Length: 197
Image (cartoon, rainbow, N blue to C red):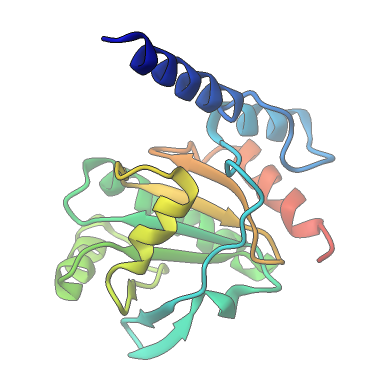
């Protein structure tokens, strides 16, 4: 490996480490448990970034909308696929979290990357997901561009969860499983929901 390439790899590694878990708190005023959960699971967006707005379809109702519909509320946007083994475990947990915290104003927006909407529906049914909607990117490319704008990489893993604040800015990214069942996750989301716009 030549020196220029080694230098680029080292710089990339240092940049990723700087925004990795354990960086400064992204949400102020956290409980100790929420701060610990944030440091273990949440990465900040590489820069201040407003979530892109693009058209989506709420499959069950056949209703069209957009990510802008969630402004004014904290939204948990998860990119997932029906053939993802981690999603099989993660989505039922997010389903329970959404059912519990919806009365407090939390919005769950699981965005399927499956092209076949029936496949996504069957996956949710088979996994026991009852309260989460199946949401599809109508143009079938924006979800990927959303991920690329955050990660600046062609490598997108599922599940990847983006937590948007009330202003629509990406406040944190959870790659893979996020231990969403923990009290720290709930406290972290409640602290974010308590912020004013």
